[in-house]
Image (cartoon, rainbow, N blue to C red; front, side):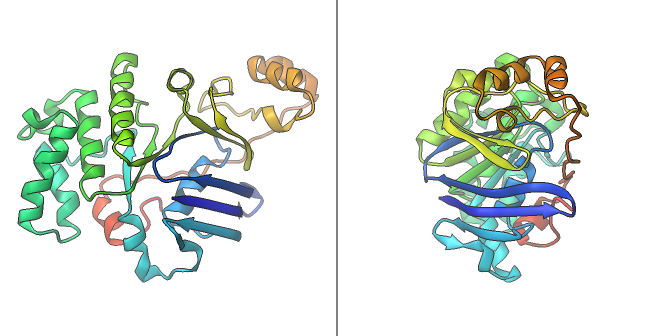
Length: 292
């Protein structure tokens, strides 16, 4: 489904990805983890063709997207559904209308919309809320609408950017169960998350990025101590002591000790900020980049 072959992307002096190689097969469920600023957002932006790599190749569904022109970007993005942390629902539209809108901007017929929207609402178990507005829904219900919208145009892959970040633990696990069922039906899922407890419980494939490097790719646990988004100290973890797993583990568990071991703090590169707001139509139509 997705192949990164020795991909490098830098932003001036800041590192995005360095010589990254990953193969995500069709039907995989993959967690993308790592400290803030490690390169996760760069990874997503490259898949969505919002930015181009400095070197290397990216293949999506058998197509080398590093070699396509701007006119072909909408076709690339239509293969991917996006699920966001803060839902990004249109407040003045009903649940049905929010999902239908994702199809309308691609000029789907009324017949297609009438058939598809009820189906995906039933799939995410929210068909009974079709005529409600987002403000009338719980956070978990809003996220189900977000997932239904992402599925509306039959994408081959879902990219979920911290989809449980605004949910309580029980609701978060309900959403994860839903995503797992969607994956079982054949949709590839790439989920960016800092939720260590969820990753540990799901026991899926984990791709870990550390300072732009792919440092781990295996089934299992999260592998990092949870890092606060506001932390200014970047702990290199896996890459600092690749030859000494005891020290590497100690660094992850005790940042203060890690600083003493290193003898200095290491400033993490500033993460690339993005804001999609209500720019769903621009995203689907291949207009202005939604992360700009």
